View 1 (cartoon, rainbow, N blue to C red):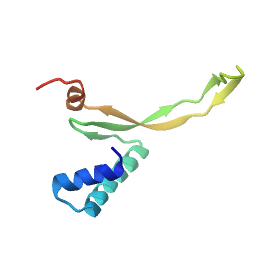
View 2 (view 1 turned 120 degrees about the vertical axis):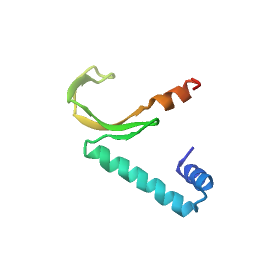
View 3 (view 1 turned 30 degrees about the horizontal axis):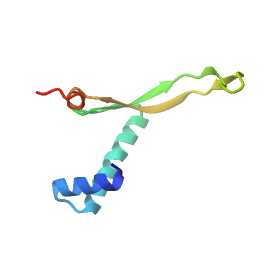
View 4 (view 1 turned 180 degrees about the vertical axis):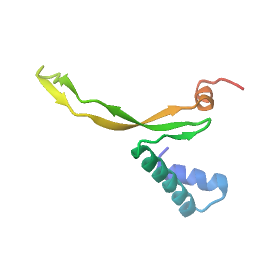
Length: 94
């Protein structure tokens, strides 16, 4: 499913126009992005938690030449599925 298909699904499910559904989705994405960038967590009970993950700088090896290289520190977004979502994915019935 891509963004446009998700917007159509949201619009159909809650009887909104596609413009309204797109605005709602963009607001959600903006809220998640800004919250995680600040280093805070965003938790949706039953669905999951968005958080910031930090990797330290480290040394690695170029697989083609075998030369040692420095890999810079990096921040990335992390999502951990909640229990209800994980149970659903694994076919666990309530």
